[in-house]
Amino acid sequence: LSSRASLSDEGSIQIILSIHYLHTKGIVHGDLKPENILIDNDTPPKIKLCDFGNSYFENADNPYAIKYGTLMVSPPEVFLCQQHINGFSADIFAFGFILYSLFEGPGLFPVEPLILINEGKLPEFGNYPIEFHEIKDPKLQDLIYKLTAIDPKSRLSTKLILKHPWVSTWI
Image 1 (tube, one colour):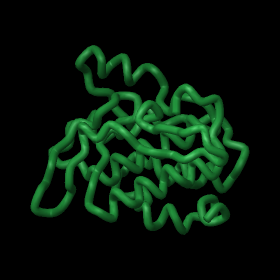
Image 2 (tube, helix red, strand yellow):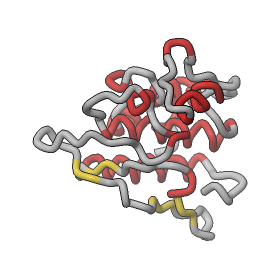
Image 3 (tube, rainbow, N blue to C red):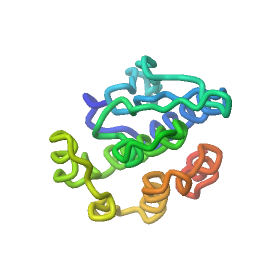
Image 4 (cartoon, helix red, strand yellow):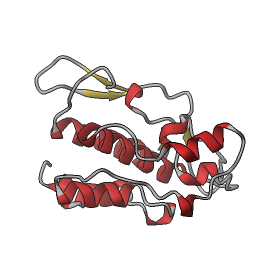
C-alpha cells in the first residue's frame, strides 16, 4: 500500500472488511500497517492483508500480552506497558492510522513522544493527544476519532465500524 499514490474509498472498505473477517474468526493481525496491505492491478483493485507473523487467536482463555508490531501504528496502551492489551482494539487503532494516512497523509502522533520511547522513556500520553490535520469529510473525521481513541474500550469494534455512516455509504 505504501507504494500506491492513492486508494479509493472502496479499497478502504475492503481493508475493514478484511479486518472484520479476521476478528469474527477470533484472529488479531498484530501488525497492521500500510506495508502489510497488498493491492493488485485490477480495476477496482483487490486488497489483501499480509504478514501474519504477529497474528494470534484472542480469547478470554488466552490473555495474550502483545507488543504491537510497528511503533508508528501502535496504540497508546502498548507504550503504557499495560499487562493485557486487547489485540482487536489494537488492530482497530492501526486501521485508524492507515485510514488517516490514506486520506490525509502520514502521521498521527507528534514526533516528541516517539523520540522519548526510542530513548527508553515513557511519554505522558495525556500531554500528547493525537493530533489531526483538518479532515475535510466530517463523517470520515468522526470515524477516525472513534478508531484512534486513547481509551481502547472506547474504540469501535469492526461490527460498529461497518454501521458507521462513512462506511455504510460504501457498502
